[in-house]
Amino acid sequence: MIVTFISQCEKKAIKRTARVLDSFANRIGKRAWQTPITQEGLHAVKKLLRKTASKNTAVSCHRIVSRSRTELVWVVGHKQAFNHQGVVPVNYTSKELIMGAPSKAKAIKLDNPAQKKASHQSGTELHIMQGNEHYEAVVRAVYQPQRE
Image (spheres, rainbow, N blue to C red):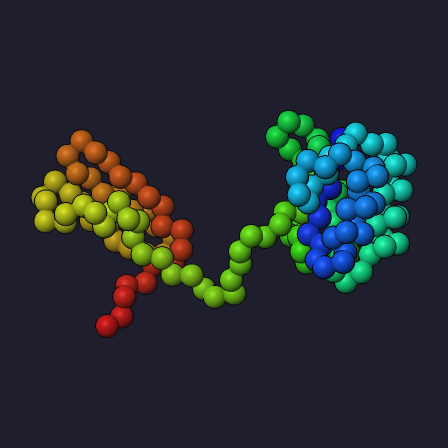
């Protein structure tokens, strides 16, 4: 099987993890490795990573299932560095996001009689007609009008 290792380690754990993974796999990025490996070899890699793991260690192993699909095999170390699918979160927020109408919809003049306004309710679609052009955008967040 072909596997990919992704490292999200910090501080000294970066060097320790890289030393282990460089001995088993080919580096394909700054913090990524890929190699064909047997189940026994994969078990050996996991064992060595667990042995050298610290609170700054975070390594995920993904098995390549097909050309466009991978499967998370395991995570060693800090599991919150990855989500349940083994994907690295780039940005997150705990706030509730509020979005307005799409930018193309704002650019259209609303005094044209050929246009049709849609009501903005949570989870509805916004359809705006102008001559032969049809703009459609799905409002994915809760739309709330600006309060004055």
